[in-house]
Length: 587
Image (cartoon, rainbow, N blue to C red; front, side, top):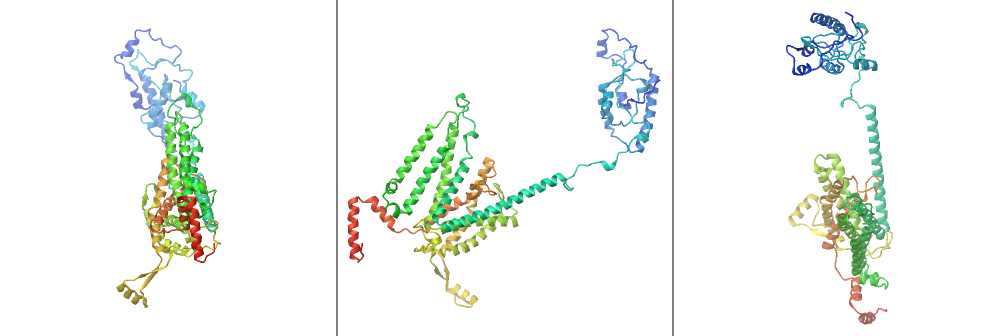
């Protein structure tokens, strides 16, 4: 028998026995095949082996294989037994009849790994040229044999098997180990971005504070322009979230496909302008009656301000109805409601803030400062002691930061407000928009800025006198300081919910910031979310508990112009002139 050293076939004894079938009686498939012509023996193929020859060949293969495995064990080469089954499965594709020298079988043997070279793959995929592919069913014998063409065996000489170099074995990096070079670079880039963001945010914070203080010193008119600019930016950012281009059409009508968006931005800004004309016109007429009702050119607008405002709004409403088109109806009406809600929350709120400026800069400056103070202290206390989440809409907000900012804002409000109430420029209502910090502003201060004394209860007087070593009967205070505590409580407990509202708004639209108007801070809406709520509260509180309602020259003039005819106005002037002359005053 010839013996091949370059190609050897392996299989386990259990797999070999499993592949042998006792052919005592033919199976159904074989019986079906008897009807066909008998299988002619292949004269070219090798002669068939008897059972004894097959047993001898198998025994010889087991002996040779044991020798090879012992040599491989000395160099530490072991494979998983599961590879035996996989090797059998892979080699079954290229099955062929084997000669007695090519048959090797050993129980529990470990097969070597398949070669990855192209030549080896070709050798495995196709049988040798001298072993033709044929039907493997031997009808004349007692058994049916299936042999698998397996990969080449291990070399016979153990010395030729290279021992794997353990130093070259690479393992996957674990999380506990140090990061690799790529991860380190990513961390450096991320730290660099965070550092740059902090620098940019801090720089623009000082720029905003400096600009705010500068406009405060320049006068009321510049602060009013600032508020109008902020409201315009906020309105643009909010209305930009709703666009017909971001929504599907109501219908798939071919006529509506590819048409230009029928709802133009012109109508958005038209309603914005009309609303500002109505609200700010009301403020100008109220605070500058002495100017408006003495100017012949402004008088018609002042006398008919409300009917003019309503007419302008009606024109916009008619324009909206005329712009309705099939396929956009649902989105157009949604945008119509969106615009009006934005006007209510933004323009109306900014109108109240402007009224606070006209009532006195202190009613605008101090409440706005309290909101900023509360935000800063909430961040400081949250970073220092924050552990308990406050609200799901803002995961970074903590209970510790919220409580710490509350007490810090209370103390800050009394100190901050008590300092600025000393200046007439801050507490006097506006009479002339041309004044600034360098102007000599004089007025009768509101009674809340007048110092008073609170008489202490008798037993408490005795107790305090004994402790301080001097008689204590009264405690001086200013009523404005009590109002400051109310403002501080609102800025700490209620105004932050304006920020929470904005956070929920952004989550609803899956955005991080409303815009990029302020580098490092996002959009203007991200900075003004709490200020709008605080401004409205300040105006309502001031007009309800602090404002003095008394007769002024402007109010009398408004009554004269709007309630008296021309003849009655001339008669009033003659009577007033006589009265002045009787008092010794020359007119």
